[in-house]
Amino acid sequence: MRLSTITNWAYGATVALTLVSGATMLRASSVEEQERAAVSQRATFDKLTATLEEDVYRLSEQARGFVVTGNPSHLIAYRRERAGLRSVEERIGYLKDAGANHAELQALRQGIHWADALIEEQEAALKAAQKGDAQSARAILFGDEYGREMDRVAAQIDRFQYMLDQRTDQAVARATESARLWRTMSEIMLGVTALLFLCVLYFILKQRILRPVVRLSDVVTRLAAQDYDAVPPDMAHVDEIGDMAQAIRIFRENGLERQRLERERDVDHRMRDLLSRLTQRLQGCDDTADLVGVVRRFVPEITPDFPGRLYIYDARRNAMAQACQWLDPAHSLTEFGPSACWALRRGQTHRPIGEMVDIPCEHLGARGTLQTICIPLTAQGESIGLLYFEEPTSASQAHLERSGTYLEMLAENIGLALSNLRLRDVLRDMAMVDPLTGLPNRRQFDMLFTRLAQEAERNATPLSCLMIDIDHFKRFNDNHGHDAGDAILRAVGGLLNESLREDGHAFRLGGEEFVVLMPGFSLDQAIARAAQIRQQLQSLRVQHDGNLLGPVTASFGLSAFPDHGRADRLIQTADAALLRAKAEGRDRVLVAVVRDAA
Image (cartoon, rainbow, N blue to C red; front, side):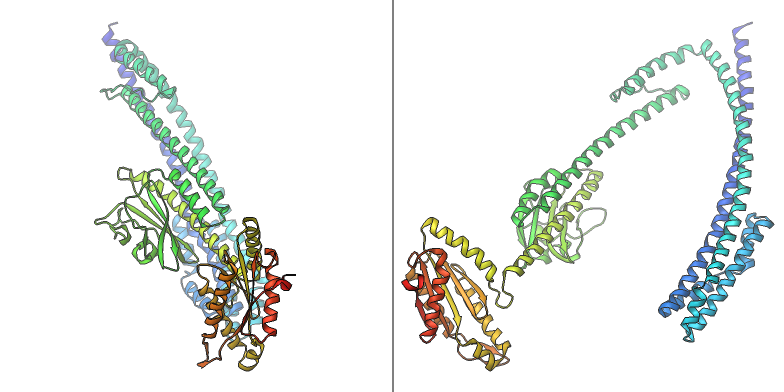
């Protein structure tokens, strides 16, 4: 028999087998379609009945809310949802049209009737509540019978869904068995067709298949070893070999994409580790300088291609002042008002360039629109700082979006740490500052005096101590009232704070008693400063409730190291001098003598 005849018979048999195989596949597909239809019908029933139980519970909640709280909004919501309910026959009709049988509809109808019975009880309870009989209304809505009726509704709906499940499972099982049979026949026919086709290929297409397969095999071997530099050959034939080549190309592209994702994952893990360490370091910061140092060290590592600056709000100047910078940013002023930044105005991240056109911030100090990001640092709704970044011009959109996530996390962590530091400073000030005068209190005085006394004795440097007591302060309180006395204390505290702004420290020890420490002041310098303070007190005029209070005088006791003994005894020595000043007529400065230091 000639080769052409064998080839023709083989092609004919191949076509016949292919048609039969296709018919069996179509039949299997039809059976699977029946299976999908059964499942789809079940989903339709679920969708049509899903809201029934929810409606019952929602109406119950609204009715109970009105009965318990008396809030008319619950009654309005109840009426609105009650008006939206369809009748029993209308709701049953939807399910009947979708294919539910009589037994299933009967089970659901019973559940809907129980639900309608609940609605009648709800209406009765609402009427009782509106009449002021809240006890009867609660007895209806929270009684055992009401709960049992709700359970009956749920049980009937569960029964309906169980009947649906039974019927759906049976239909799916029948369809699955039939589909399995047809698929098996289809697979057998495909196997016979493939066998015959391979025989034909062996005789007449050996050269067309063998050579490309060998080439593709080499590529597949290299790709299996994750050598993605191997490029599959470009097959011009539209056949299985071409599909294999296309599949290998897709596999290679997927491998390259997987490598890229793995690199991104490694970068993400590294960034998250850096963010975690940054958070830990920020939590350990004792002051703003520590925080700035941590930010300057970590931020360039987390965002290596985003130059930027950290600004911290200075309330005294009402300005955002630069605390640090990294990677040499080219734009943005080192200090500006909060209104110069749109991010601070709006309380959210601001990017002039992106998918939406926006306005550049005034603090950029440059014309034109720049690729920048401003992220506000907020605490309790107030802006306490700003993170400013300059975007790289050559970065992809995906890289910018991914980096944007890290920038937001940075801002959140830094803002939280800065807020905690500010809260800590506020608490420290509250503990160390006298709230009436604003001067440091006794606790801060004890800490500073111990340190200054040790330094003075260690370095042999002078240290002076001036004790001040306002004259006849109790009499003043008795004559003018305690509010006027507080006004005097505030004025004296402000005077001392202003006169010692650059050298010396003033404290309020309690009551009308103040103390001034003057490190580096010799006895003569301290006497001159005490005279100056006494003169300023005599010139002080305080107004309270529109009245000018009388002149303020004080008694002063002054001691100095090393003139009057050990540094740690200066307080006792100055206090003894103060007592002598009060005993000798007040309104004077007395310097300690040897017997005071004893």
